[in-house]
Length: 198
Image (cartoon, rainbow, N blue to C red; front, side, top):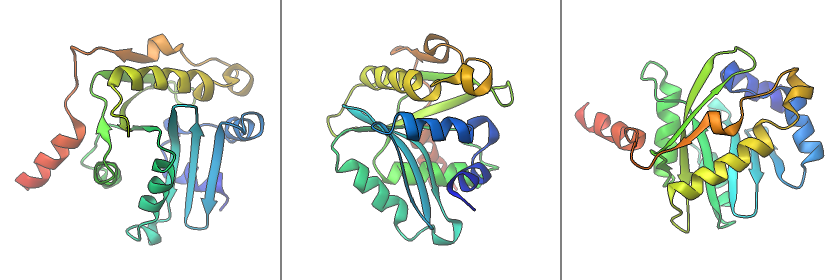
């Protein structure tokens, strides 16, 4: 399997970019969008001046637990910039969502509870609510993370969307919301509590 097939096999269709979209990002935005791969992993990420956005991270199921994900995170953390990513809300029937959250929790990520994020998938036309996790060496505020997320959405997620998909994604103002007073439940803390009560 090539790198795209591995990602496509692992991530839900509504979260996947098309192969053309990712190839265009690698070709035309090669100074920002990167692929790091080995037979055991695929990491797609965008690196901006002040932050890094992890687009996709796949680790081969037979090598999970060997510290590959941790090594990849350390490599990104060494750049000394905030790291942001999207995760689907936890689904206790899908053990992968819980494992992913546990991994990012161990890596010191926080849940951006004041950022709402919901975009319509061009593949399924369904709304796809996601949660934002971040790690910040400068202890950035969620408002800063929100601004970075907006830039990433406009530069990466919607890059040439009309040309690639025949229609445009929603504007960032519709997809991303920042509300300091309306915080969602803390995903990572909720998971820890559930673990203790089991």
